[in-house]
Length: 453
Ligand SMILES: *[C@@H]1O[C@H](CO)[C@@H](O)[C@H](O)[C@H]1NC(C)=O
Ligand SMILES: *[C@@H]1O[C@H](CO)[C@@H](O)[C@H](O)[C@H]1NC(C)=O
Image (cartoon, rainbow, N blue to C red; front, side, top):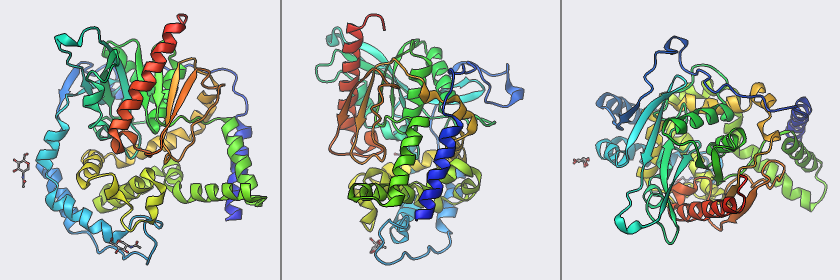
């Protein structure tokens, strides 16, 4: 373990030195083309209705794969989810997916909100668009546009229980949201870029263009997980367009944070004191639980080939992430504690968005682009954003909120929760809704006192 930690520390040091200083934020091409070159200039840029449909061939193929999978390897005794998904509990999930999950009814469920697609920079981008229905008695309630961005292995499905509340008058708030909830490029119904380089800042350009296409020059952003990295890039690149940035994972990645990680790793590896011993546990935990990030960040195609071919494998892989991402303690439950937060249907809906669209591999490429030299050289987190920001910190999110006033000089506040994890909107939709209204209200109040913003 020590050797591993030292190697990691050394790598971090090299990385930190390699981009210690970036002179200025290189402008990003506003219309960089991510589709096939031949489609350039020939795409329909209208906004088209879209419906979720699970077609019979896909369903039959999926069922065959689920019915005829090879025998699962029995789990070791007493390890819970520590070695990954417990295959004894996996089988009932496989059976449920193949025999009880009602594909027709689930597609209807997905279609309760209006879906659209429109081509941005060569990619068909899919999104839900919900406008509030205000009655005559709703008086002076202001409608404000909110772009909601998901992460991985989440999806637009995470927000289904929150969408009705966010788009209806809520408590005494004098505003309500018009919601734009896209699938990230390469996730679910959104096309994947055909060439390398689409890291969070490039995705931010796509979403800025999407909002412009919908007529929203100024808008709020809510991001979770990858969505928060993209939201942070939006706020950094377009401070005149992003009215406020609200997120439930405020993180940053630059030479400074990497140096900190390095210091932590060094201290841990030297086993200095009991305080440092706690950090050793953190580093060990980090290594134990983030192997996926390393492999997505390096060889997504290799892992993707297997997981795209085996729904059982992909299910196992996803359930493990939902178990740990919800609550680290759930690793020690025989069933990963999944039923404590989610129904089978809810998680299978989410998994279906990846499976039915064959986007397992393309979704993993985002990590590869994030860790690329090109993205590191851009060093977007070395540049501050004046956009007023509010973060929610759930206790079971693996990442601690950055409090960097250099990056976020207008970080107005952090809501500390006593419950919840990585998939806040999915796990606790009411809490998520409450906190989004609260944070955006604080941002609006701040803007009202700072007319120059
Ligand atoms: C796997 O799950 C089964 C069923 O809940 C349980 O009996 C078994 O102990 C679990 N195995 C581990 C290794 O936790
Ligand atoms: C599946 O759902 C559809 C639509 O809601 C319904 O008509 C059908 O009876 C359901 N099938 C089963 C097997 O329950």
